[in-house]
Image 1 (cartoon, rainbow, N blue to C red):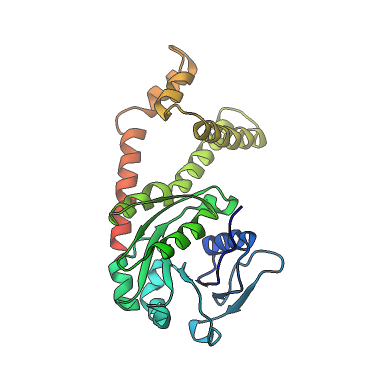
Image 2 (image 1 turned 135 degrees about the vertical axis):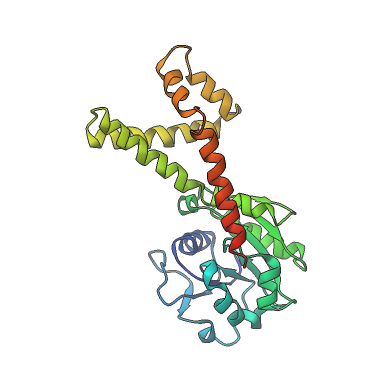
Length: 268
């Protein structure tokens, strides 16, 4: 059984921040504060006070962690508002591209910062997050951040912060690639004469079922693919198209490279 979570200050309660807050409340979150003028709060009674800006945080509130869940483009104006918590609370950032060095420059060098990248399956507690601890983060703060991230899925840690740009491209943005595949499969099914409702059902269930099989299997993806591909069969014919030069192998590689590069530019 998970231990209750200490009080936190959540800066930004959009889709991801709201999903994380809902999971923390399920874990037994202590009375906390959300800073957002229009938050996406989970339904029901929750132990949070909502304020529109950092200046309105109740006096004397001492969060164990400040979670930075605002858009990365807002970081330059938002981060300086939370400097009073530097040296007192650990900062857990889920802002894409924003480096630990850059955040500490805005928050103060006494700020202990953990940078993480979760993904949207967090909404159903099936997310994956990768985190990196910056200078001054102690063992207790790291454990707290791990608990906050684990509430919505699995957590992995890296020592090299630069890897988080590739993590963002693969895992952070990855659900969108899967949703695009579902969209394209549905459209192609309709083109082949399937009723729209059936095409949607087949596309969604095929992707969710294949993902569940992949998650449950000890075999790697290439082995599972080969198991479905009978020589001379329909799958082999389809894969011959998808594996053509300039098709999936090259386009997926180019897509992740583009997303990785964009993550790096967000640091500026």
